[in-house]
Image 1 (tube, one colour):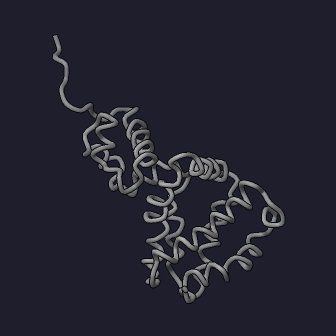
Image 2 (tube, one colour; image 1 turned 120 degrees about the horizontal axis):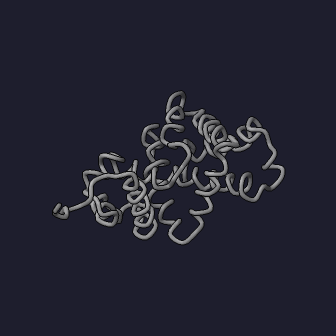
Image 3 (cartoon, rainbow, N blue to C red; image 1 turned 45 degrees about the horizontal axis):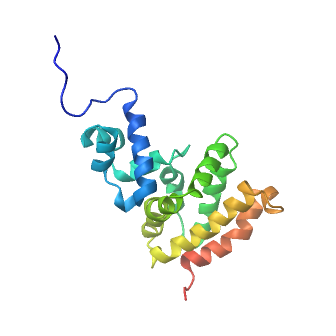
Length: 196
């Protein structure tokens, strides 16, 4: 007769999904800072080393838990290359390239709507901003990235709501080139201009 196994269960077909479900719940309830890989592993009933095996770092676990159709860190990586005085144009170009893709847009809209639900504020302020957005400002060598990048994010969130969620005209039907020409000067000021 086989003896029952002890300890945490090994990885199986549903293990990754269980870890992601536990991570989503923890990030929503405790925020990014309050979530630990050890606690997520305990909630999922697995060893923390298995979480590291699947996801590596807490940053990557966070991105996976958000169920984004693309990794924004990879999409925004080219933004860092090039002159800093044109970074807003590159940022908007990368952003619109993803958001205007009809294959990606439904999943992105789901993420935005979930961010507006209870706990979503912590996912954004304690997760998305420090994990995805602020590292861009640091990589660019901007002064006060902790102030500049949330200003940038405020404009981008407004653009998402107006263009993709509420579909307010003329923003909803503007070409990417016109949107970049319209929004880039404001974003560039937030990134490199004088702050009060």
